[in-house]
Image (cartoon, rainbow, N blue to C red; front, side, top):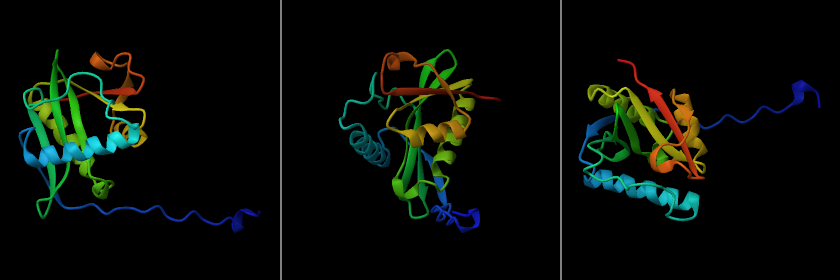
Length: 170
């Protein structure tokens, strides 16, 4: 086939950015709980079971910073939290954006706001864990400046865990 006759790939759908706000809420806030339940359902489907997170289950006590992104109507679109680990490190927990809001900038805004919250707490390094059945999450974190690291904490020895870190600048 001659190069000029190769059909062009159809354009990939691009979602326009949406107007949204970020709000700090308690981990057990109803909208936070709804987003976390949606995340669990998606992960259960991806992994084929509900046994896909090693370690201690996050709680309101262990995740003192939790953010929810909302659209102009107040609908909760995405979330993420911070769980202190000690030694100047914090783990990003429960990063999630509803499928209909993906590709709109919500995830990046939540992650950047979590980084700002961590800096305000004097944190110098953010850690996180995602999984082998979440290649979209791995691409996202790498694009956002996170580097793959050896498994840490409860994730050591997990065949499905993929861990990342980012050193925070002042």
